Image (cartoon, rainbow, N blue to C red; front, top):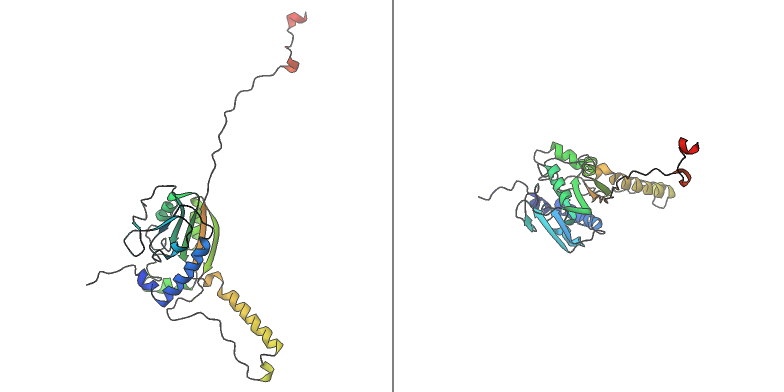
Length: 264
């Protein structure tokens, strides 16, 4: 009898819906890593089996997870990473905070190993969108492995408490949370008379307006299934504090005031 797999992320990412999401995330992660350079990059969590590291421009990169899996190079507790502090140029948290029972400690560990001026890139599912609604009503965890979805605003509050400045944050993957559905632009009804022919300028304008409205609606943040947030660790310069010396009293005009006996 095969052992149970409580997470089931690899199986779900192999589905058509999971493959679409992973392909989109590879593009989004590539954009986020475009300006990240350095020696070491660490991905915490096994989401994607290391495919995000292919876009990294750092010299060395590794996936750290709490159990052995495909693409994992280091096995360690996520709440106590076996990595020295202030030693990593960039850290990726790909859907790991929402899967762990202690996301605050995982986030603090990511900040600990990050060098000053280093980058922290986080992906998460949007709890206020359609995917979040299904997460609430689903009998089983959806997306698979997600314990509690964390909103983008709440995550930014956590980052600020750790002295991490948010550089960029955006939503992506505007598809409904159904396995067999595809989000396509609605088809415009075909004309049934000459008055509604495609050559009619009024019809052309209406069709263009409907397409513009639809593009804006379908890319509205609540429709985004996921978000990606990039933050940077603040680097504080140490300014030496000079001691305040007691100033000597300066003589007026460089002369000593005469006493009463000398004046007489």
